[in-house]
Length: 341
Image: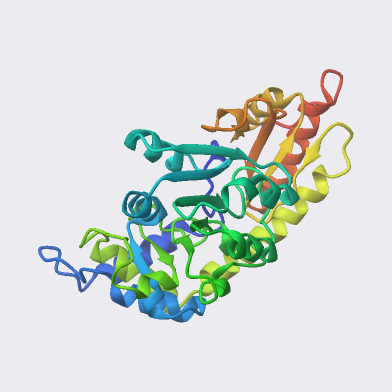
């Protein structure tokens, strides 16, 4: 059996129990008819759960559709993409022939200096993710607030991994109408196959704000399953607590190793840099774990060090992953990692 640790979803939810929740949600659906056109019930429930005004929330077919729609609706002259980032922003900009600028940011403290030359443009859309993928760390909320104070244009903050993080920028939406926060039910909430997420912005309360979602974007099954989880989020919360515990164990096992840089993580994955990154991926593959070289991610800066992104595995697998990484990183002569699972 191979565990796919390239998939950045929640590996700590019970798939059978989650499917049972979906089936219960679908019991009273008339599959021949459409459900709620604009997913207003989900918007209201998500607003209550996350503590934001309901008229600030728009629901769509995952953060992917929401980001795509926002860019196409609101573009005015420039897209500034804080990279590395999900490749969707670059893909849409290039498809449309827009002015696009990738701004690589490596360390957390580099964000504001790197963006400073572009913050005065009111026709710019700045896109960044936090926690970052694949590096894993979250930009401090105070840095995001400082960015919003200086930015004259729209700022799109992709928070699809924020359910695993200690903080969120959602409290900033009432202060900064130029902020749009993207969230998803695909990661911590375990509904990737149903394609449902939501965006939050004070600007959505304005009728003239350009954000034109298509009606009936989200199926009734997806809406009702999300509503069920929002009404009873205990399974998600419990799984996130387990993610945190296993992430701490994974980090402890890989910390302080000479020649290996382990980035701080606020997500459900860790990113490590080692000149033997390819060997780490190969070693873990032999042990039954698929992982991802960071340079295989589209748009990852080519001149940055070699590294590996590893999604946090469940409890029985953490120690095996640590042993595999250390054996490959230390090179020939190290004791072999166990291959059986």
